[in-house]
Image 1: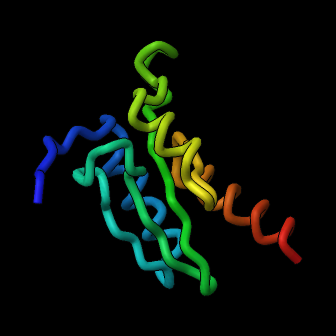
Image 2 (image 1 turned 45 degrees about the vertical axis):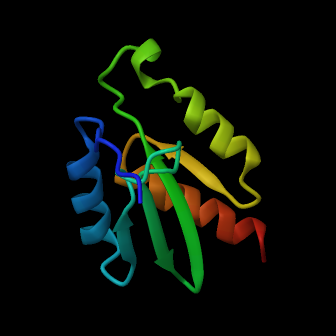
Length: 102
């Protein structure tokens, strides 16, 4: 299996910890080392799976862009992928998705 360098945004750990505190019933798997554009987190909660890419809002816009691999993965993925800057944005995204699918 090919291994990739694990590069995460500076706010990655903080976002994960805040989300775990806000949603202790969720299962959070850090996928940031998977490579090939795969999102940073895979979250399981409410009987659903959520893929989440974390970007740092303190970086200039050019440094927050998705990599080519991320763009390709997001465009080809048949499910949802959210790009967020905070744990609150993860929760808001989940709430929107759940209310849209009722």
